Image (tube, rainbow, N blue to C red):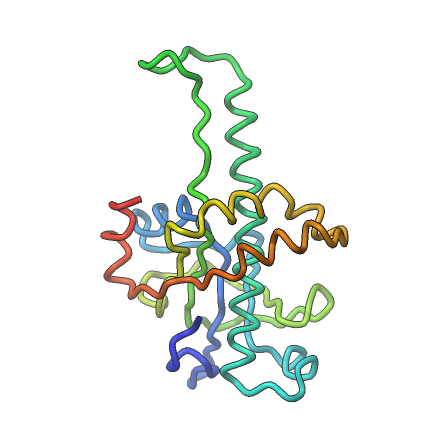
Length: 199
């Protein structure tokens, strides 16, 4: 859930955006000190989102944008798993324990909250979607939101059915609901390196 200070668009021409991510992407963020959203896509409280939720206040709309980013994180996890599986199918030697090279992703959704300029609303894609114009520097990040360990079993199941849910499967949507019942934990940017050491 967004912290109270994150519920409104920032002043000075900046917009609070919610960027879907994974633990692997967070590791890259800490190393590179910046991150580029996949396909430059993020979520925010846009005019189209306000229109779609006419009776929601800023805090409720921020929660909607955050939840959309968290669901998009499931799609990124599905892609990471597919990429890892494909790499494992290629030629290579087993590791020291005689096992293959496949390493499943860490099944925790992640969302990065940041204040950016130049974000363009894309209601043609979805009400809360924005297209970013550049990579996001570490100093622009307000907080990071990550699942707790107890969510991993449900998140792993949700990753398996995310494509079916996108196609309208009610059974898949039910499984996604189990994962989305878990709230993301809030972390300040200075806490991120220590969090990643524990994963």
